[in-house]
Image (cartoon, rainbow, N blue to C red):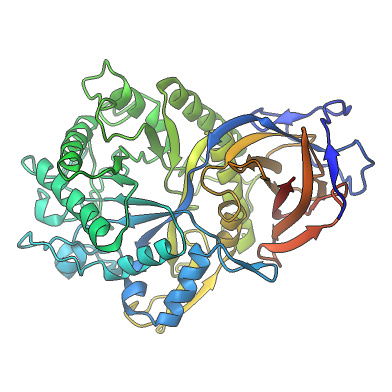
Length: 535
């Protein structure tokens, strides 16, 4: 196998744009056989950005049913797809998720129809009895199955999040709220809610050797969650401070090391804008500015992380860039890392010039758009962790793979009873997320990648391993033309190159590039991960 030292290509007479620039839109040229010295990509390992901590997904809502009621063979295969990092005979077994989000449910499942939530699967179990307040650690058994599997496969970052306090502690006795913009938690139960959360953390630590890296007690507080569709509650920033203070005390009293993620904002603009509802917006300034009455940055267990969801502000390239740049600059000014903890293709305001529309979209079209969102969150918002919304879901109402990584179908069909075992199918969203999650591992750093041509239809980012023995680049080509991603990597010697391609007909298909001077072709409508082993 040929080894070659690739030097700087900055002398190439082509305008090179860094990932964090905002170039004019162009269509990639067809350069399938470039001559030596005309690389279209330059990677600089000396220029680093954020450290990646995890790629993750959530266990809402169906994991609890599948983990408890489905056959062992089905459950094991699903877990393998989500968590395995093995590559056998050139084909990955799964996408190697390095993070997993566990929903600490509110108890609407135990309430049944009395919960008011019509959709049975969106009622969540709780360890706390809705009537007596006693604790039963055998609940959420299906979710416990999947978090155990995640740990056994080597998943390293766990987040316990809550959509609502247990219904035993809510003001209306329900998992949805009737308190408008204010918390549904009883005024005298902030310390009780905190102790319940930390008791759950301690249960997993003591009985399963699972350490929750983070606790997220509040989800999308900018919404009122006043309709009986699922569990949820609004929160004021001042109320978020109150629960954060109590959680900090409770974690300390139990000698737990988990950190607190605060205010998983419903959209990115809520973390830096003060317009409209000032009591719930401008989260960075409200919670992390020492002059604010709601300041919590001095609490021992508060993570220096701002957390948001990538919904809604994802409809076109210009919005993706502008909002993510605002996130990065606001977080940087406050000395905070950035986490993106929920995205699926929830919105309906997608530009017709950038997306074909849900009726016409293929499963691959939806996965390709997801890659655009992931790229912008990584390269412009500088997120350290990126998480998909639901790992498992049935395909209902012609939604295709908008809200799922793995399609799960009970015996009675998509609208059947999930207490009956069924079948599963990996979708293109799973494999495209795998183009990132399987290869960009915890503690990899994003590094500078410049492309001769980059636009809303062609983009890429690069990462380096902690030991500096591996560089990973991920490219997405939404254009109609083939692109050559042959790269010049400054001051390194390349041992070998492999690519992993996901497109309409391939799922992380492996290919070995035997000549390190050869072209690396990124075909239209594909996501390609290039793995460089360095000498």
